[in-house]
Image 1 (tube, each protein chain N blue to C red):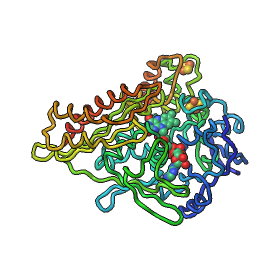
Image 2 (tube, each protein chain N blue to C red):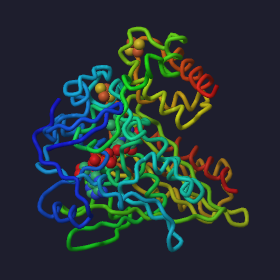
Image 3 (cartoon, helix red, strand yellow):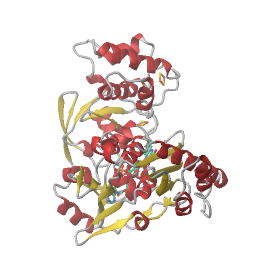
Image 4 (cartoon, rainbow over the protein chains, first blue to last red):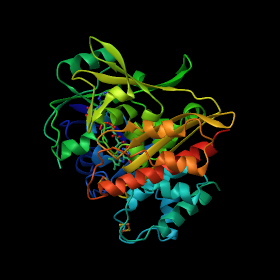
Length: 154
Length: 284
Ligand SMILES: Cc1cc2nc3c(=O)[nH]c(=O)nc-3n(C[C@H](O)[C@H](O)[C@H](O)COP(=O)(O)OP(=O)(O)OC[C@H]3O[C@@H](n4cnc5c(N)ncnc54)[C@H](O)[C@@H]3O)c2cc1C
Ligand code: FES
Ligand code: FES
């Protein structure tokens, strides 16, 4: 089936098998390997991308379901070499160690700040329930989201 | 993990979708239950019809004194609906408790109901709300109660070729308070046990009680013995305790690695008492 996707502002038109998962389209066809595959069973959130403004797990969606959609991956955040405020805050607040969960964490964090411009700690933790990190213990990630929200308004 | 090969159609109209379903295709909604099952090859449908392509199945509106929710309204649509927050807060509270944000962004009320996972959250609330369900096929349309729709684990009264098109819930007056409370399975968020309480007070007495329980047995149910025990009472701590003690009586409780049958029953009693107390405290 032929599908058309816009990923990070660039259009892609491609024939795919219906069973191809969106994450495989992103990594193997578009070559955007910033989106990580962790559990492959919709539990870890490493594969989180934004689809029409909503955070979703790209390991649990067929690429054909995204036909016509606008997708943003972690590669689409920085602008002209300038990091997005959420990326900047993860860097400053040590919101990562090995970095494997980070692309998904950042995409989920963007959704939190979109929906709650000044999120409470509870809203941040509720918004990160779908993302697992094996390294940081989460506190630094929560701090990063807080810092990003505080900085993004300035 | 690849699903078995299948054909995919994103229909333009409901009629087209119903026609394909009448010919053996299977509905795909948010995919939050179906896609994991297809990847594990526990399900291998030959033809999927994407209901999310049908924009006219996604709505939340008030009509004729009731609230009508289209099958493809996502958990997030429901959680964030100002109309529901005001007129059916039990449903927004339940939707917000499902899974995680990514699951709520895609998963739909229609898919959750049709999938009928014994640990799903909505069924408790929909039992307590005495919701009605509109089922449509190419040739027929019928409306079922929650009691008739939920048949068994992963089994509803939906027939092949039929879709759930709408969920209808009542609008309660301000003397009604509601609450949904669950013990969540830590990894997925599914309810080990979940209890939805809906209570109304009149002149200092409890005049109406509905209690929906999920997670405990194969299907969500209304705890009618507990409801009757509380009706006519003032709602003291002792009244709540003795009513809650009845929610699991006679129920064939599930047992799995997360909780034994006895522990589940205990959780149901504790959560019923807490949900009833919270519901009562929310009466305006
Ligand atoms: C990580 C994770 C955590 C979760 N946690 C929870 C939780 O805490 N609580 C909870 O309740 N649920 C939870 N879920 C399940 C989630 O709520 C699903 O969204 C829901 O069960 C299915 O809805 P869907 O729209 O995704 O349906 P799909 O997966 O697309 O479909 C499910 C089934 O219903 C059928 N179907 C879909 N729509 C219709 C329709 N309108 N008419 C007839 N048949 C239809 C499909 O053919 C399929 O058999 C979780 C899921 C995941 C992946
Ligand atoms: S890889 Fe998608 S949720 Fe883990
Ligand atoms: S930084 Fe290593 S998994 Fe999160």
